[in-house]
Length: 551
Image (cartoon, rainbow, N blue to C red; front, top):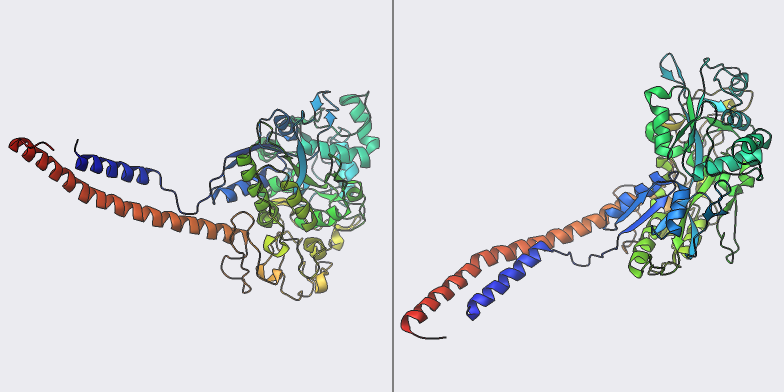
């Protein structure tokens, strides 16, 4: 092979390699990560994963239940776990070890929400969408003391409105569940007279009454694995009469109602993002950084809050982060996990209200950034509140929670002894409760009357924060590195999570298109030029052979 033939072969090989493996200029590569655990948080996490995939961050998640997620973390089978409760040391029900097995970790709150009571009761083929239940009634339903929808206590909760005589089918979790743990903890503290004898008889008589991650089956109860299967049972044709405990997001996604739950102020309320934000102002967060339980929640104040808007079964969900290179976590996977966390702690929170969750307040976002900094390989990021675009952030009052400040008061017909209001709940509900949450100086309109428009034009609907609320430009997207520009006119895409994802995806797409265009041009050039050189080389070779000249 002469030098021309060799040169042609090399050029063709380089051209083919370039076409097969185009890499856009400036593109970052992320190592794939995998998480598992809570199904309560699954809808939120999968929304964030979908968003992150748009700009090349590969992550996956399995909602196998909080107990399974914690076990996966201890066995180094995942890059992160998600759970509603921390490691228990020893599982109080199974007696099995429930710890990290020596794997260093940190807890980080990721999203707030309400454990809702999704149900299916029909009258003349139409769903009842405005059910009200007290905590005592709920405890009796889930311990087998109330078994029919026509029970007098349910009628009393609904101010004398009787439901049809129909068997109640409680739907509980069959797997180890953080949702179950939070629900049973609430019953043990608020309705111990009803729950504790049930715990002793069906869970463990030899242990103190308290939470369990494994709900026992009883009476008419049906057990389902995971929140999605529980919701699927309730919405199925055979689900008539069923009621189960799921994160509010599942009811909204299925367009199904949830029960309004009576709070300590004697109002029946729904777990909207507003009511959850109000409730969690009464949560106590562990602030001792020397404890393994740093940032975990104590909810007694939520259960007993006297604010009329409080949803009593409100709580946070937690990510369990690795804090060392432990044989599973590497600098590469830690870099991905850090970028993913920075995204969902800020921009990702914007989608939580419409999805059925409640965004984290800014103080917990800041604490989350501090926890992410402990992950090996994670890029160090300082929180910029304005650039973060968190829906709870109020530039005029940085220490407050904007959702809680603008949350509407319940209507008079939601009070014990009045109503029911007749408004739909769950998937068919208005997230503002049929009222305008924008009152003068953040005060809400009451008794169904809209408040006066707030100065600055805030328009909270379902948890989204309008761009013009932020008041100023600035900040850098913590994942993409792009500058954040707020559009004061409320038009266009900049200043929203969707807009920034679209902007980045567009930039990557344009870069890819440019690169591919150049490669196509190169390929055309190669196709036109290389054969000419090859043909000339072959002819010259033949001429040389014919004349006896050796090259």
